[in-house]
Image 1 (cartoon, rainbow, N blue to C red):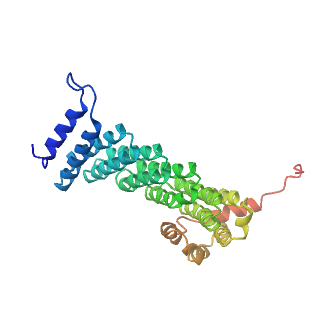
Image 2 (tube, rainbow, N blue to C red):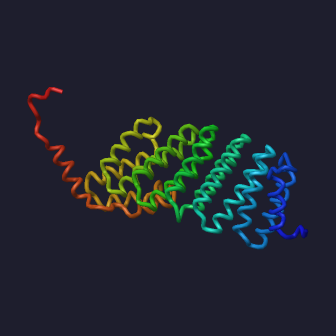
Length: 296
């Protein structure tokens, strides 16, 4: 038998893993070597479907040999080939499985990285799944108290939400980034995330939610003396005054210029709706008649 024929290598390996009257125990060690050889040969021949299947089998073999690290590596190779084949369901499944195997051998960083690779592969085709993978990747790091390593993953997931025009979800994720940054004592990243959340709400023309968000983050004492707080305060004041030119001026400020590119783009488009109505609402609130019976 020619060892250069990957199909024959797979056939031989399969026989080694199947029990029969003459074989009472599977020879996973020999079979796994053959699966790995076949996978590499198929990949070189650009037969990605067969290469993917061979890597899956090689991964299973390494699992049977109690080597989750090597099993995870092979599963990532299968996932990369699934991407080449545009098999998006398998891309997600394989990267998730690779992550689980890395967790088995106590390696949270590669486990998170595997999920992030899957997320990046799916951003354009299955964005909701990509967001879930990014979020899971963050969770893996946070459970290992590595919040600072999750910052870029939160930003990437936020970008996907913005592309989907799911602005409330995007703002919520920015606030989660702020919490992760707070736990990491990364004050600058924390305050940038807070300002970003306010901008996202304003871009969605949800002034009430932007105001509520600002009131919540203002409970953080250190934030009150920050450039990001002053910028958010000026933006909200300009909205309250219905001052379009002031909104545009603040949106061009250096504080906003230091935010993530996607947030800068949103800020530069403010205001996105009619702000004159806000001025009317505020005036009405200020001129409400006093209730003589209300002694509070």
